Image 1 (tube, rainbow, N blue to C red):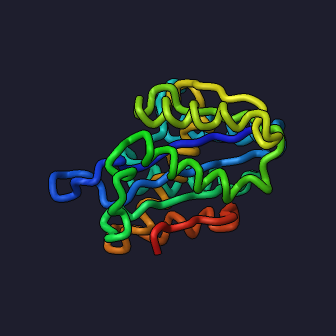
Image 2 (cartoon, rainbow, N blue to C red):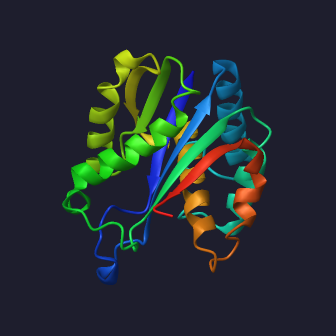
Image 3 (cartoon, helix red, strand yellow):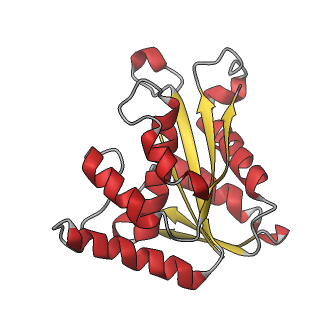
Length: 207
């Protein structure tokens, strides 16, 4: 079992000074390694189809609507599933001291997504984006390694997303979830509908 995790948004609470309103974590899981390989190869082929260099990286935030739709339609037939957690930082419920500390914030957010997914995870190899947010990957890896003996997680690995197409998929899923919450943005629901059949559970907290 292979699982890939990435985030969208930031943990800052000073929304009036530019922090994102939502912080989203996506967990993408393949139960079968051959299926993961097939999806990886399809993403690589898509780069050729759209005229990109084979070393190019898909990134939801930077890509055009046309590329986003092509990517999501390309991966949608493959047998993966995903979980998500969205933290609404504009809520009055985020008043505790713990939410002013990045480590506590990350730990809580990671705890939510893995608690929701624990029944599906069995000796999973978790892959984290090595080139992503430094604080996020540090605290996430620390949190996950404490969970290794639970049976749900076998190993935690860090790889660069520019060399891992399935981490790029996790980036896309995080971006899709985050965009769908922002109902006034273009294609807010459209992207998520393309891969809706792969969704297990997306929790928005607090309600």
